[in-house]
Length: 325
Image (cartoon, rainbow, N blue to C red; front, top):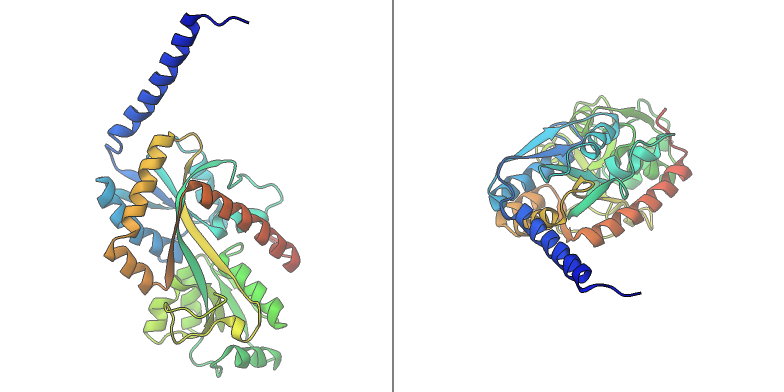
């Protein structure tokens, strides 16, 4: 089959034009404020960490980042809004393990798929959970908490940030691993759930660190352990749960998605800005204060991490017999 020189020239011109168009799209981006959807309420761990990053991300990009809290249904509402947003680079979603993978696993008919329905910007953090108790509860270690639970004393309620939240799954996982039972009391977000333990309405929770650190610092919550499989300088005086329950390991991730079809050149520009923002002293200090590890991954690595997270969390949800009901 012969291919004319005209066709080859036209094809080359078209490809060149497409590349030029992509570059032009990103050249003046952004020229207006960017909406950043947080699928959790104000004061939650996700909200706290997102705002730390968003402040410097806006500085790097030269535009205001407007945080838009869209809480509800374990993060599903925010994920759906982001999925259906215009893919022009002016909508970001603060994606998390809970909202992106766990909550949808509890639905009979999931309304979105975290791998297929979004484009990826990159990961910026790994979130550990902290096992905290009401300060007046007579326990000061994981071993003592397990003994207290097995003693049958009531009330013994586990607070969570809602059905399908990271604290819900990690708390259920801990109960199974420890061989204990506790009444699950879901709240509307990490702020209310940690506040319920500080007030004595619930006796304990296993919650992302940012939702607990303020209470811990003020003495309103007593930390017993964390969910990293090793000790960490972020919480130097707090041991890992794995010291008591060998092999216990549960962490989450955070990063940014954009609506499917967002120009790749714009996604790359945002990702480069995220890398710069995470390197600033302000962000490093803020994340350390919230006992959160900075882990920066590009789109490809981040997508792989999410895929692996989906597999592991699906196994855990099935093993625990969890549902949205």
